[in-house]
Length: 335
Image (cartoon, rainbow, N blue to C red; front, side, top):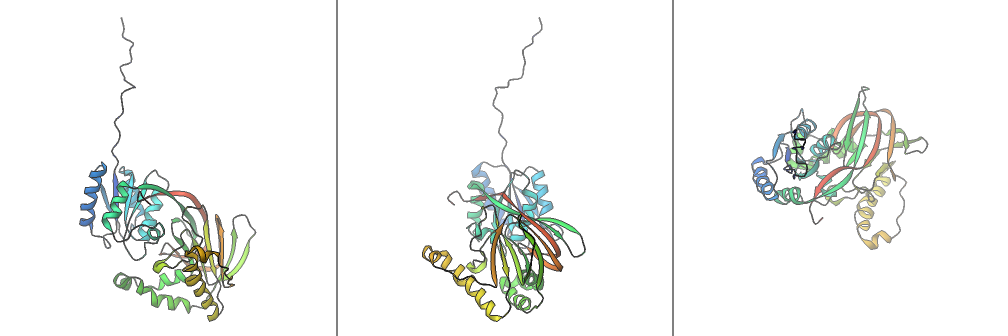
């Protein structure tokens, strides 16, 4: 008699796959041996497999090696670098199931600051990666039509900027920045401030009608805080499903004084206290805030553009939209 019994035991428990992490690191900014020592201890304590390591380069600032890490089976990508390296890695991660963990290094680390993560603490950052929890954050998606008519697609986590900040980055000496950090921007800021050219932009926010504006600077932000505790976008949140737009239109030194007062005092001091938020504030004509989920801009000529602190060349048109909860980031369990 033929045995028709199915020999496959479908009730047997399936072996669970061991999670694997990958470290994407900028070799100029990190101590790899120190990272490996801490990672080895934390991965073992958490029951993870052997961590993979991928080095960024000038030719590949993070996108390519992050794709290789994910293809190699990484469930979590730990980025050891500044905001530029994080942004590059996020371009490869955001359409996958992998999570992003931050090991802050560099001069900015604005995403880490806005997530209230610990800076300059290797042990705490690695421990949070392996034993923390997931937090979903929004992602900015941007298409850039460059001055040479080429089209590129990118993501950003912190800010996209046209005008002052983009020109400042274009004018910054990278060798000096590596030596003295943010002090290198002082001369570049002065040079950008003395630039008399203004942005002439036709834009459309969400489904509203197309408008025209002349501006000194336009910033589209997913995060609000800068270095030195400067709160540039007081209502920005990394997980509210919207981006905040700042338009600067100063016409004289008095306008710059108004802008400085509003950003440093009203935003930086009053807005951070419960009582201060209840006090009336005066609108400044030279500074406007708006919110949205999609934005298209057509410029009268190609202008410098930056994403998360990296110069991206020139742009004569951009299209930006928000991807709510577009990226999963590891944060401390008690965050």
